[in-house]
Image (cartoon, rainbow, N blue to C red; front, side):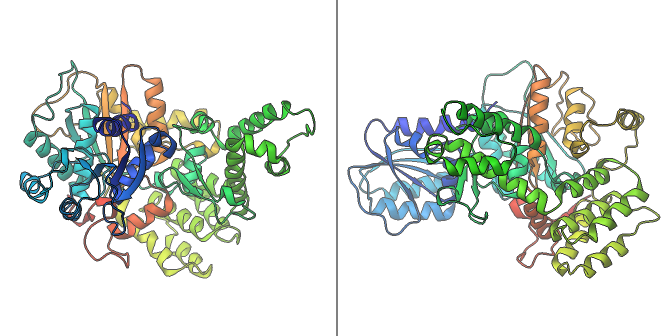
Amino acid sequence: MNVTLAVKQYISKMIESSGPGMKVLLMDKETTSIVSVVYTQSEILQKEVYLFERIDSQNRDSMKHLKAICFLRPTKENVQHLIQELRRPKYSVYFIYFSNVISKSEIKTLAEADEQEVVAEVQGRSWEPSMLTRCTQGLTSVLLALKKCPMIRYQLSSDMSKRLAESVKQIITKEYELFDFRKTEVPPLLLILDRSDDAITPLLNQWTYQAMVHELLGLNNNRIDLSRVPGISKDLKEVVLSAENDEFYANNLYLNFGEIGTNIKNLMEDFQKKKPKGQEKLESIADMKAFVDNYPQFKKMSGTVSKHVTVVGELSRLVSERKLMEVSEVEQELACQNDHSNAQQAVRRLLQNPRVSELDAVRLVMLYALRYERHSSSILPSLMDELNRRGVSERHRRMVQAVVEYGGKRIRGSDLITPTDAVAITKQFFKGLKGVENVYTQHQPLLHDTLDQLIKGRLKDSQFPYLGASSLRDRPQDIMVFVIGGATYEEAQTVYNLNRNTPGVRIVLGGSTIQNTKSFLEEVMLATGQSSSSSSGERSQGTGRHSNRR
């Protein structure tokens, strides 16, 4: 089950259905992002798509020699834009594809606007969820793309999970003909979870390549903005990291920071061996950057290498500048161990270090607040005073309480912090005895245990009930997980490892967004009604406030 491939195939089908000839791809803001994630410009040019336009653009020229392929979300705004387009068509013929179900009344309105009979075809599908309605549309569209009609389980402690499950089920029931796929021996399963059940995972610094890039630099539609990197060259101010088109990135997505540095060094040395002169030893990231800068010809033939050297060099600079190894070690201890005495001392020590950034100081206090929320000797008020003395902004200080409101013990439906059943306690005990190979990667997301229990048939119906009377008797084979409030790249790695190590089981992970710490904290502030930009009771990315939780 490959969602990216499914999306790519559907877009290819749209383009191919229009036949030979020069084409323009007419999109909205959201579908532009979808296309940019799955297709490079050079790839789509090979399919005779020579122009890319927004449906809401007012300054498009009339080009009657082009066919228009419209890929739009079925919003009222887009329908209105399309009505105006059809009344005064700029292209010879229109193939219209909506990203989800469109009402018959709107199709009728479009047909009435098509006075010049330029529309050849109207269809609809989608892939990207956002607000609650968008989550429903996105989920049902992904199910259609994967040709799955699943049984649904949801997180009982989350009202939002149940509402989304019911909404998806309603669409499947209403559009039963679209979901009439060939039956499999074991039905697929959709599991809907809520981010608030595990607020710890998105707060942790990461040490694998993809997760580090998103946490420290930010990934947006596979693009990284490096314009603020000191001394950055013009051609590297924005770079693209796509596992589809970058073999090095694909091979190193889930490797840790040390391994990535070694692999880049090996790759550069392989290139270096092809040159008869200048075979210098590469001992550090700085040496590698100097090597690339000093060899223009090498730089031209190895854009991938120069890109990754720049990215890893900036990651290395930030790790050193922000003392992230020391910070991360304490984060991992807070997330995985239960030693209050050592924890409070370690957090205090780092809060007093001026090189620790404001964001890292606040996240340490947040992790402490979540871990020791009800500890009899909690020093949270003292740590909040320490943040105040450091000059941490009031908004950042308010985030500490907001995180506890969002994902504290009162909200959670799981035993995120302290396991209560005998099996979980025994597992934690033996994990402590064995130790860990890397203190920076001790943590495993709650999602790992949830999926492990699901695969083994031990996930409790009392916590994750089925929607409807039916339930699975056999081990699930195709599992789709959706996290309201956003998934993380650490959880993506968990799913990758489970897929690799569990023969016969295929898992796809999705969410209302892909969170890093900054985006997650914005989500938290909106969810708890503490964001100045929040004018309603809706959580960002389509998740509602938790005042209505059971």
